[in-house]
Length: 391
Image (cartoon, rainbow, N blue to C red; front, side, top):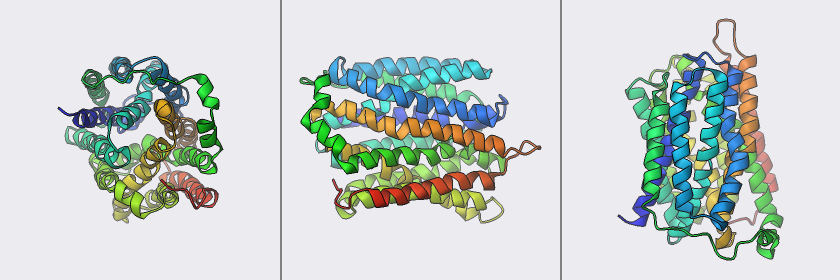
């Protein structure tokens, strides 16, 4: 088995774990467990809280002290144990603490695995999308499986996520060792290379734009599945997986996109789509303009890949090898950290404020909030990012 195949399998297990722990959890928490919209928002915010503190630290440990594949093993064992415990939890405080433990251990694996890919792949800008796409495939299959087996509103996805996390832990043992990178020192964070990166206007604008894009993203991951189920769209998780189907083609086409389209335009459209899709959700229902629901889901590839994956490749081309894990940890912080934390809190409060006496929700009003945020963030990025910025 080649290293590229091993990395593809790890991407598959990693995103399957993430999908199983987020796709239908909102429906399960709002339904059988009876959590409020605010409590659901707080549960999803554990993802962002973990991304705020853990990835930079784990990235630094991988760059300085530990083999990256050994860290993947340890982190996924902890994540598997936490998800298993979540399967049995029924009260909000217990579930919240367990999800926080899960995210503190699992979220850093995204930046860490990306760094491993950039270490071990030849010409990552061309080969990384073909490896990363297997994560999209697993995300799609997880959504189809949830609908096929009819477990969207149960705790079974959490148990399945624990299994895939354990499989990822085992698979990490097959990777060639990646020792701590020689030459890394905290003093290097003040070196001319890194200072040059931080002072580059495009880099600063990119990090801020990623943070802003996370605000509307939090609404999507927290409440899209509950929304679709509440308005009576059957097999919601399976239909949500159509977004990953489109994402497969977008990710595979990224090397071509980088050759034909400037990085500034790629990220602009990625952020803009985050906002526009919510206007589709606001006005579409299964019995009225249903095609807009499909449209809002199918643009997931542009919304995700043209921001996060593009940023990973962009940043990797601008950091020294000894700082790769740290840099990817910072991308995880930007794409899953503070922005998602604030976004999850806002989403929870907006849903709570628009909860009707019947227990239903005024979704038309709810979706307008992330729509406006996404469009405004895209326009700001277009103005602020240097026109010369490219790979």
